[in-house]
Image 1: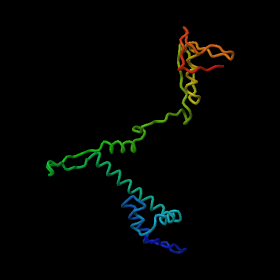
Image 2 (image 1 turned 30 degrees about the vertical axis):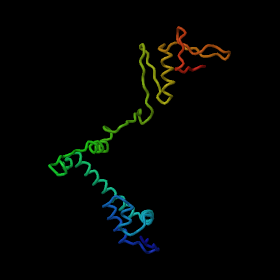
Image 3 (image 1 turned 135 degrees about the vertical axis):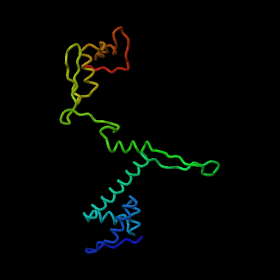
Image 4 (image 1 turned 180 degrees about the horizontal axis):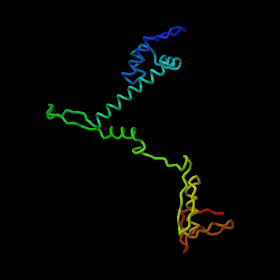
Length: 191
């Protein structure tokens, strides 16, 4: 494909329009460039240099996305008629619906309800603060601290953890639960 030469006053409006029309139809920069008989790099240079062209490019892609959403909606709600064959001959048809299309549309249209992961934040988007009530006492656990350390500290203060000794520097004991049973899977925090 021959690349159009660009000079200071040469904007190639016909090629730009052909590119945009093909982009609206194909949703592919490569195919649109081929349809306009230009190189992809030329299209990207035009986009960088011409704000109106860049806006038209974005609008063309948005139009494609709208058509894709409509197609997904039709597959999810109206279904698609598919032929049924028996012994090599069509004997009927069946309407198939797309649950996957419905899921994508719901995730996009109502992300607050259907997204896969929700991020929880405290007031003003800050960190969460949780309150723990044990034996009538109220303790605040700051979620910005390492969760494990905060929970271990809280459990130790309320007596929910068994006593654990740390090895001394002079060759003291291993970490043990009461009764002398070793618990090698549990890490200890030594002073």
